[in-house]
Length: 488
Image (cartoon, one colour):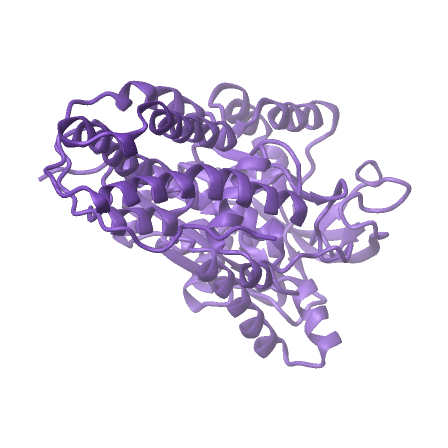
């Protein structure tokens, strides 16, 4: 029996105070590309996503809408599930933090840390940003406002429980400096600079003025601070402590997150885990933001693009391709429909769509046996593509794949197969059909529906990276519909 090496990948869980926007879609797409790539590499992948439903901002949004909170979060959680469906996100589990399984583990972790002496009662006085669901210092603010949400934090004074975060500073520094917890280096430097310049203070981990949230297990007058409960989703979803899934998949191999929540995932989360005697995650790869005219997409700024509505105008694969190609993982990237249309008409229609159409048209007209010797395979450098993926340079990996597609188009133009017949035509068709079969594997993580359509027309099944070498073509090709339609 072959036991596959495990790979556990997660996204951040999203607040359900409004419908998802393109920034949420981008993170899910990136994680999905990595998950699908790892499956093709032969890993036993577990891919988790979900929604963060215990936040105060969710309650405030429900009250503003005049809807009971439970009904509101149920309704909005479904919007995120729908987004994942229309974007073909291949998650294995969708966790909602209002689920009983999550509540139970959140309280279990809180109790465990309390019993260890790492949680104590005190009084919190300071600034709180509801948009971030986070406590702020004056140094965190720009002109007195949260830089993320452009709002002034509220001053809060109340009895709270505190977690001894300060106790774990040396542990966190070791994780970051010596274990390579944070990627990229620029985001690692941001955290190290903050840890070096500021005193690491104990963290307020409860509120006694809220009705919505998870109760502190030993004090029903307090609710658990949302970030203390939200981060626990990564272990509650896989059945901490006794579920075989937890024993099999933890620690997480990748927590895919946006740059705005770096501190929570690379300082607070590892400290919580250490206190609870749980291994830390292996890597936290931090991505940039989708922007419009240089400004971050956000509900609070009102420049939201609904990905579900966007899919009604453009096929999901075109959006997946565009976001992976145009937005470098570690940087911000600007979205525009004009640019999206250009990519559809150019790289998708003219390069890939045109190649498949030309090859299948020729194949339909050929009645002989398709056989030959590998020739086009020399134009593919998979190791180069793999190195780009290992560094999470999704856009560069995709460009390398497209370079192979362009080489295939060049091969068609040079060989002029419409002028050939017999063995010569068979040889050229063999190389092109095998090239398409290999291309279908390479593009599958990025544009899975298109990959499936190519295999349907080739009469083949999707392979893995073990099947990238040219071999005997065993498909039964039959031309189908165009992969992409030109956009006016």
